[in-house]
Image 1 (cartoon, rainbow, N blue to C red):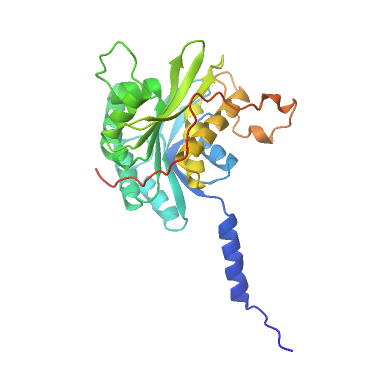
Image 2: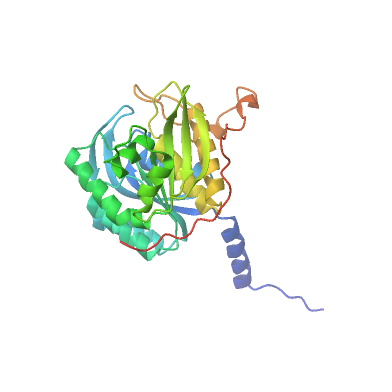
Length: 315
């Protein structure tokens, strides 16, 4: 009788294939280190891991801050940022890229070059509130982001007020711009989709809208929390990036990311004397109550599935 014993190399190949199928999606993040744990890379890493991704964190600088406010930012130079990113990109299969606050026009330029080289990888860009920073630095940063990174961006994420003042500075109408107005402004720089958060509604509600220049693709309404949070935007954008990286279409990923954020905020905690921080690992905490609160969100318009195209490589 003849027995066919598999070679050790065959066993290794089978094991590698099984591991590849079971491996979490790799998510590359560019952001600043936040020692308070409120936002920045801390938020990105914990969020991506929480929703099942593998975070690949490139440090672009560091904040000096507590849970109430940002006092200063210390940036890395563009060479340090580039070397970090290139090293992991040559080794790991990245499925999506998130760009948070990267500190300087030089770093924006370096990241834009990287995203151009990996134009098949979707880029989710988050623009935070920069009011803590110096006015001249804000202007330089926003100009560089608009000219260099928005053309590489698949989805732009930001608060309604922040995106309005950045993308529509000459808005003259008595009414506030809609999500579609903002999406049209972003599309002029090549952004196909924009997720606009925190749009004020009557009776203590806010709306979060995914829009393209042509239409509103979906919206989710939240009741306002009677609290001040830090890190919500980084949490949402990191969750969205990880869900897109895991193979979800953009509509499904947006709905799931917003639902995840809502539960993080609902379980939020105040570790210091400042703002409340989202509990990004809420699911790991012991259940003290029934699951009655786990009701579906009040979706005013379902976000249907659709496939997000690769970003264009243009400057």
